[in-house]
Image (cartoon, rainbow, N blue to C red; front, side, top):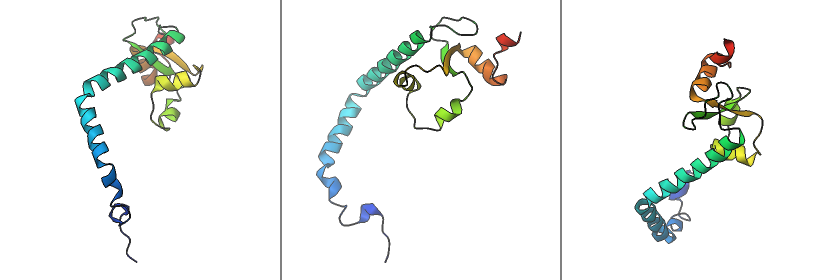
Length: 127
């Protein structure tokens, strides 16, 4: 018996046609309102980021930088690779959902990159 792709099977062919008009409507709606959707998504991410930064102190744990544009989330135990193996979701949302675990800290961008390039130790701490 010859195997055919599921979308070519006779029982599958009519299924999509019933929802074509709704699919087209949703696609057109999304195209017409993409700017509003992007603005909403940006506000939602910024709100979650603000909540997380406020909980962890709003400053770099190494150098004390307070400019929020420079602040990033860092894995204290350098085990971020474990999280990246899982499903892709917002880091900030995961932190909120997990009750702000102690495995995260705030570092400024410079300290975070320095920690990465210096085997897990910020250059400020080696002086």
